[in-house]
Length: 438
Image (cartoon, rainbow, N blue to C red; front, top):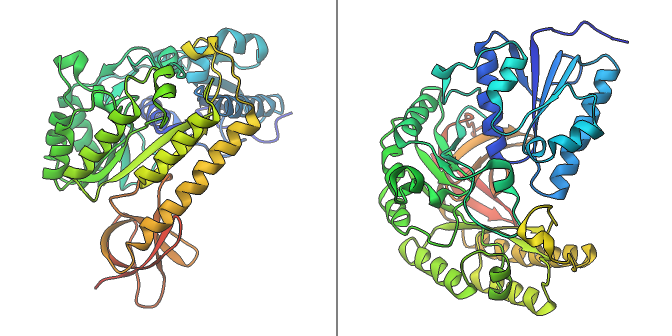
């Protein structure tokens, strides 16, 4: 039984997973708004007649979270709190037939490239003139900019090509137009995202064109920080680092998922590189930009990973001292190359190995942060929370990295979205505490 009157033309878009999914949701929301829908991102259950869940299907935990969210909204539909539930995104692309059979109360399932079909189902039109337009779900001063879709890499553990297809670059001129549009909205920082940034341009221009794209984006008035996420290490284009060194707008920050520190495991993962080549790449990057912050991600418990392989990765992390690091436990994904192997590392061992790496990284982060005490940095203020203004330096991306905390007092005021100069007073494992420099 309905407990309240639902707004017939109101859509609640719910996003699961990564920033690339968030970008897709923002594009969808702009299209819906242009079709006279009232649209919100992750509003409360019960205030929208239509819910669209943009799902993640990357690894087991993400799939479970997406499924649980679908079931929650199906229950809400049964209780009269929602009229229509639609599911889109990676999970739906990958498991549509199974989902239709197992959760039939969803009104329709759509894949990753089905936005026109979603709109058609809602009696709305896909407006081509809105290409690049989005309703931002991030704070007004930063936004993600997806420069390509899909992936051509053969990594054995990864299901992304199954869900997102082959690599497809967006033309430079379109991305510049998008960046100008964001700047007009007050965006000061853009984070470039793709399944693989460093492959950018090979399909359109027959060459790696990320460096050229960066030069053009640096010309956009209003954009002050440009940040790079998800760069593949094999065949890394070093001209990108040279442009980073030359252009002040490009943050000295690089997200480069390396996945493992054992050549044997890297070969099994089909990463196209070795520990030695990866180590040399990091040394080369740091030799050009000594103060660069490198973020990486690793996988613990890949099939066949021995104690010796793990120890090799552990020792390598200790040697490399990455500024930022995260680690996943291996997820055995259907239809990937690695699925034919025995998932032979027990879950308990996977977790213990991942925990050991993160404990090591915590110590590394603490050591690196102590070196920042007494130094001055430019910080972008993201929010005010409790007794602090909270921001980030160029070495930190939102949600995943360190934050800079500035204590509120009668002499301290920071405006959200402004850049301020600070001096670091103290540091712990993952945060810095600072005062404003007048």
